[in-house]
Amino acid sequence: MPRSVADHRAAVVELLTARLVDRTRPAGKAAVQDHGSETVPLLAALGRALAVDLHAPRSLPPFDNSQMDGFAVRTSDLSDGGAVLKVAAPIPAGAAPEAMLPGFAVPIMTGAMIPEGADAVVPIEKAVPDTFPAPGADNAEVRLPATAPGTFIRNVGSDITEGQLALAAGTQLGPAQLGLLAAFGLATVDVRRPFRVLLVTTGDEVVEPGQSLTAGKIFDSNGTLLEASMRQAGLEVVRTGISDDHPESLLAVLRGHAGQVDLIVTTGGVSKGAYEVVRQALAAEDVDFVPVAMQPGGPQGIGRFQGVPFLGFPGNPVSCLVSFEMFLRPALSQVLGTPAPRPVQHARLAAALTSPDGKHQVRRGRLSDGVLHMEGGAGSHLVHALARSNALVQIPANVTELPEGAEVEVWVL
Image 1: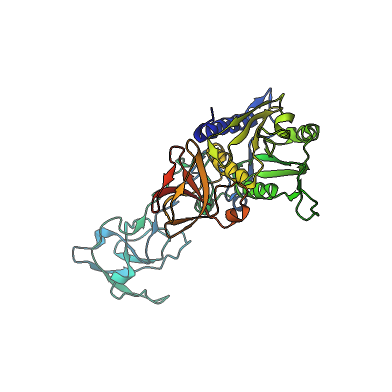
Image 2 (image 1 turned 45 degrees about the vertical axis):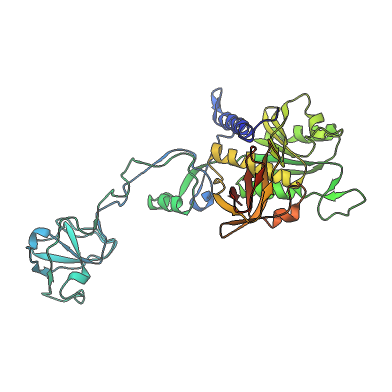
C-alpha cells in the first residue's frame, strides 16, 4: 500500500534527525570531527540556524536613556502648572553626564544617558521657548509643564535583561536577529553547520549541458535543478558528474564519497523498470524503495548507505523538484532550523481541475492577486511550465474534482 505524503516526510525527518545526533555525539574521549556547529562573523551567518541557546550578555538598553530630544528634569521641580527652570549644560548622545542639580533642566538628545537625579524627559516641543539655548549661553531659563515620572525614558533592560534567553537554538538568523546580536556587541555567532550533500544524477540517456547530443540522449536538467534548490536551502552540494546505468559505477561513486557527506541524494533509477540502476546498486543496502501516494514523485528511495542517510528521487525533472520541496526541504527546516518553510497561502482557482483519487497531487501554477492559474498539466516532464510557475498547488488525496473559484492551498516558491 502506498505511503502517505505525511508519513514519508516524517520518515525523512527521522532520518535527518538521527544524522544530526550522530554529528554531535561524543565518540569515546573525543568528539567526532564535525561537532555540528561553527563560529562565523555575523554577516556570514545570514540565513543560517543558531547552534545553541543564546542568552543576553548585557541588558538592552544598557542604561536609562532619553526617548526624545528635550529636557531631563526632576518631576518634583515641576508644580501642577509647570515651572521655570535654569538650563544646565546639554547632554549629547554618547556622553557620560554628571548628576543633575535641583531646579535645573538639562537639554538632552535622543538616546543620551539620563543623568542621576532626573526621572523624566519633557519634549522640546512642549518647552517655552521651544528651542535649545545657544551653546555657551549663560543664565538661560525654560518654562516646562508638569510631567509624570518616567515620561519619555527608556529604562535599562526594558527590551531584554542580562541573562534572559534572547534566541533559542535553531532560530534562523535574518537581519533582525543579526541586528540584535550586534546590539549585544557580538562580532561572531555559533551556527549549525549545513548538511553536506552528495548529489548524483543517473542514466545512460543524460549528458551534461554544453555537450553534444546524439540520438536518444537528453541534457541533464535534474542536476542543475536540484543543486540550485539545495544551495538556495543552505546545503553544501558535492557533484560527481552523471553516473551511468551500471550498478558497479554508481556504487563506486557512492563509496568514494560516503565518508565525506551527511546525505546522499540520487535522481532516477528508483521505479520498477528493467534498468533501475539505483534499486539494483542498493539492493543489499539498508534502503527501502517505497511508493508514495503523490503525483508526481510517487517512487521514492529512503534509507542509509554505509551509515549515511540516503534519499532516491525519481528521474523526471518536475518529480525531482516536487520530491525536494515536499520531503527534503521541509525536513531540513524542521531538523536544522533552516531554510524557512515555504509561505503557505490560499487562492481561488481560475479554472476547474481534476485529480486522481487516492493520490496527493502537486500541480504547478502562477499565483496573482489571490487567483491561481495552472501552468501545464500534471506531467512530470513539463520543465517549461515549471519555469513559469511561482507556486506549488496542494490537492489532497481525497479530492478528485475542484470547480472554478474553489479555494486551494498553495506553497509560494
